[in-house]
Length: 411
Image (cartoon, rainbow, N blue to C red; front, side, top):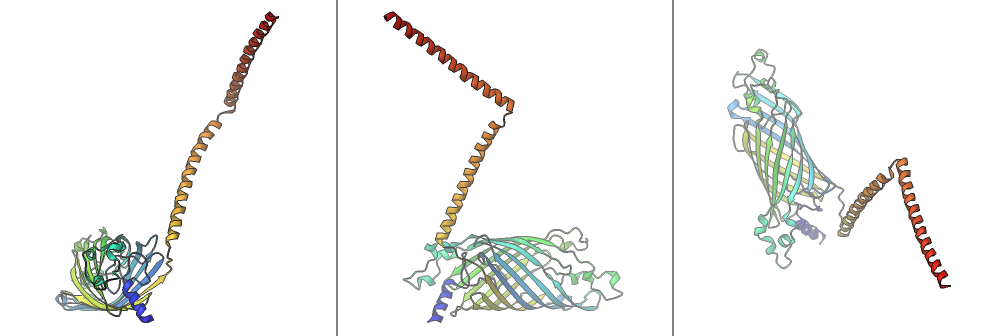
């Protein structure tokens, strides 16, 4: 009974969370796309993967690159449920077999380097799931909860912005064979000890980007995610003129991910399509795999993928793990109202303080008069009051004299 209840709970909440905090981990893995929803306030999430990659180029005498890629992603929710900051990066260990198709020699190089690092922010603009009329459970009809409706085509929408950084001057661009295509410098022909791509290599780059992420939920088990990104590579004035193709190239990146939650809600399968395009290199990738929910805060996944073309051909196998560190605290409606009332009271206090400050300023202006002027003012006031009292006394004396005369006449 307990197991059934837990499975039902997972199906209702889903592996994919909504804008408000949920009990289940909300991981972007096993795909490469970003979901529309944040992890939640005071939630730190670590998503990592190790992948074995192989690239082979048939037009470059079958030059080949093999290696391991350790990818990591840190996500943290702060300020409110809609906002998160993330850091995405990787460390690459690779072996490059360069069969020189121009000068008829080959080199075999092994190296470890820090890959591209990406710092960004994600903010949820639209959450259709908060509309209870659209997405509440129909307790009278199981079938009604499992059919696709028009409202399901209204996606959750987030905006994503940030920048990518290259800290290692050996990091490859999207075309890993680009440097192998460059002509060998004459000074290196005699020794055959250096790769020609080391001679002309650009310094670190900064690439700001912006994009949107959409997320649909269909029939309670299907989740569809779309990502659209536009990345700008800033021009580096130190790059030599012999590398015009790498100067200031911009990149368009699109990802489509579809996920299906199986009958056992701990398991899900996914498929992903990715295409990108810039002046240096364009390609299309396919990916598919599965994920398993170990606990409410942990998930493992496996996926396989590759490219559609052979110049170069690209394949990889990937094993990933996601872990959530949860310090989230739920706020009840009464606490929310109390917080709102407190903020309102604080606002009124500040207004009152401003009014008091203004009145104090006015009174201070009056008291800031010089002592002589103040004494003259006081003496004038006292003279006026004295003269007024003297005049009143004279008038009263005259009235008393008249009254006395009248009495004398009567006698």
